[in-house]
Length: 178
Image (cartoon, rainbow, N blue to C red; front, side):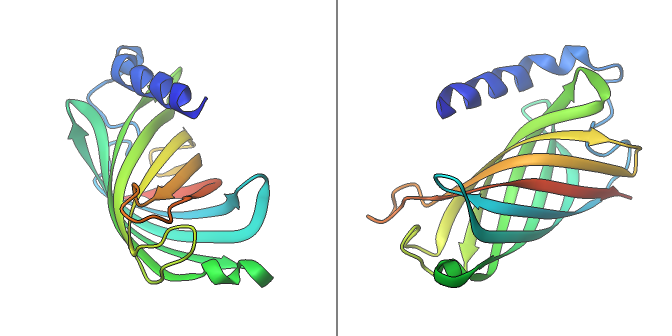
């Protein structure tokens, strides 16, 4: 099911540029050159669990294979309650690339993301400090300056080590363009 969902999103990202009113302006930036954002997420295993992530991100617009893009520098921390405190991360630093496009209306955009990350701690879910991350997001722009995104995110080390059950988060993002 997840692979099919990602395939549909990927195909839609590649063909949906024709829906844009002004395809020259990156839909995530509204003509601005910089973006800062705060992300708030909660871990999703079989259900939501008391493991939370907070992220600060700086982004710039670019193109990814002639599709609107966003390159990101990310600073993430994760905190768990009680027995989930063993998954705490003081810092996860990453660099990532988004591919995105307008959807349905000039104020709505969506996309996919792929990044590489270094974690402060090894855990039994991902037993390496080096990890990969993928994210799918859907956003609404209130103006050229302010937007919100809903996201689903997965971290995994791509089976670089034997222990790699991964980590999933769902959440929302508040964005400021300048």
